[in-house]
Length: 321
Image 1 (cartoon, rainbow, N blue to C red):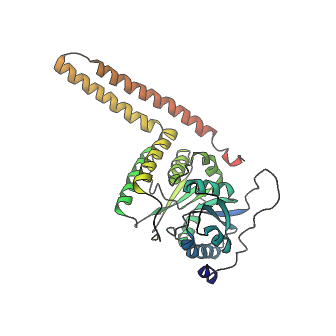
Image 2 (cartoon, rainbow, N blue to C red):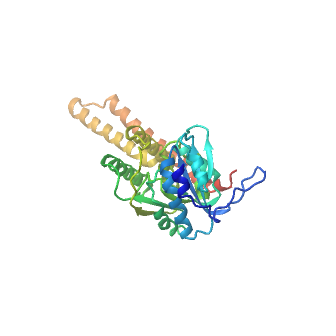
Image 3 (tube, one colour):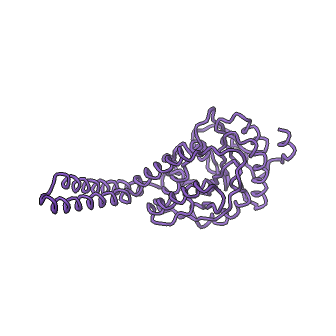
């Protein structure tokens, strides 16, 4: 804690105090930008990150901002340290997951814009002005990582980006980046879809793009993380893929069902040709494959209609309590 006191700076006047008083309704946003930092045992990294973050926001003269740290059940004094640096802190009594911390931060944030970034130092605060420059033109501005990271992780991200680009119909430069600036209102529309794990950026990206919101990618070079990563490639990689598949079927089901239907139709047709040439008959397996392909096609068609109804009813989430 000695090191923290040596570089401690007083809270900026731009940081607005937590509003007092009762009332069940959420107060209207008081700040322009809420920086949301989900953190689990990140005390050592925050000692360096928080002064840099405050300095960048003050130098850019952001009209009003707040730094909101969500302490996801830390045991190393992460929350107490953040308070020393003037951040507003909300805490979970036990770890609920990175995504759960992000959702809590989004609900608690008072800004019209929410800047999501990691507390481990991989997202340099000095890159924030690049995101803020685009906030008047886009609904979401994403920091797209260029360079850095291990070979297997970069390869996995390449696969995820390709699948997401196919689902959304536009080029996705960095599907899993947690460094992003988003309008609060459209983000609240899809908050119920976000998982409690590390894969919340995947859901946010696909949901906003498929709902017709504008997205801008801004390249940046991530800093090297100090300490061990909490993301496990095998466990969280498979989880990313399942969530990507779930969101794809939720927002663009024909992109999933149509290729499957045509594949099974083609397989059924080839099997029919084979059995006709070899035994001069149409087998039950051929019928089964053709019928199965038809079922998948009509299932995708109905799912697409349901997804379209969801788009028509979106846009009201910002007014939810």
